[in-house]
Image 1: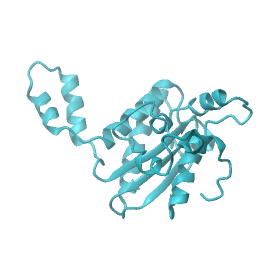
Image 2: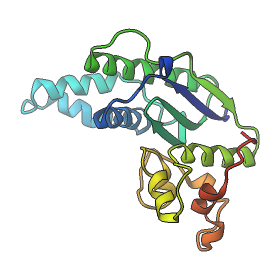
Image 3: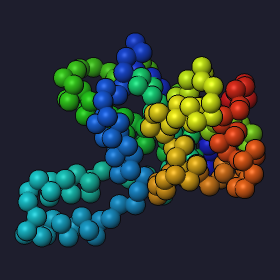
Image 4: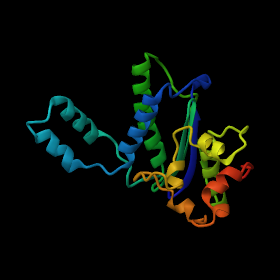
Length: 214
């Protein structure tokens, strides 16, 4: 209850879980549907509107039935790599993460298997969940997550930043480049300076390489 967790998993036999840009986009669209408030009034209006076609109505029915975790799950950070992912999540109630992860990844696996004509498990095993036990561990876990795409053999700061942003992640929300309602960087950013570049979040991510705390 009210616990922070680092969640991660990878593809079976280290195989991809994302094959192209559409896969990343669908994964993120599912996250949005699970974490944004469900507008049930609008969905019911769609069903009663004679001008809306059956495909849209069928989509509305699926969204009405879909589990929603807006009041239970807070997503602080994420990164999507070709064959693995990382989430930093806070759950309001005990076992909410289990329900969220099971529902979400069954849905994504079904999508990927159908699209790419594959069968069987997508992930190597059950996802891993590490309980965050201190503020320091929380900060370093977020930094570790956002450093995943980093190519270590880069010299300039601009190249490093481009490398950090080369995979879908929540780093743009942390840098003020993008605002997404279902991603919540505020708690972690409150520990960093907004005016001093040497003490801001980007500097922390770029310069930190020892993640033994996590």
